[in-house]
Image: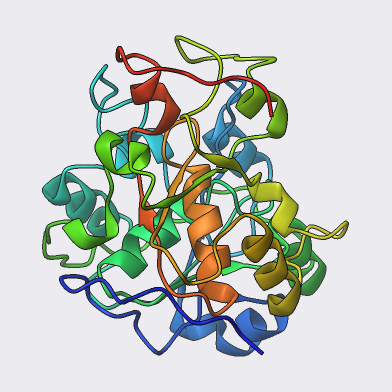
Length: 289
């Protein structure tokens, strides 16, 4: 029996019913002509997502640059990947051929933990978007040979729209014990044992470790919804309290929020600044489990 969903955010558009948060390769094959396929590869270690795209991507996929389209320039207050300005987001996607109401299926080669940013942003606006379950590997198994040439679709008109405040959280929300606060980073970063990029190690006091990749099975696909619900419930996210998710810079946390929606637990809130902003502030940091 699914757990009760979190209360609906009053100023957020409901998800577009045309697409669930996750679709598989069979679905994509059957509906390929109805969607724009987006390759959203990006790497924390500095490798180029565009280079990876040009070395081989799913046929017909456009490349969406995380830093240029899905984020504003970094800042101490906003973190490493602040939400993009609505006008810049609309311009960037429109130039790639993603117009108003255009359905999008996004993938990466990291279990969806990067592509989730694009999907969450679009779904937050009430637009149809989904993660490709299993990502590049699953899609290539269905599609066959990869392409190497850049795909350029005709530009499409796209209207700038503000980000819905009811789906966003700030540092005060992350510090509020009334919320279930989920840390989507790997457990070692949560515990403060390693910190490769941000000013200080540790986690938001009171946050629960829920690594995004734990939502995936050995094949890189999402666990069944029932198993996801059990995982969220073990972290305290059973529908009883509002959920705030964060990670290093507000990217991987989107994967946790999509997994939550996929599990039938409703919609949580994203703390965009995440640990990159928190650790740059004077707020306390907790370490250990």
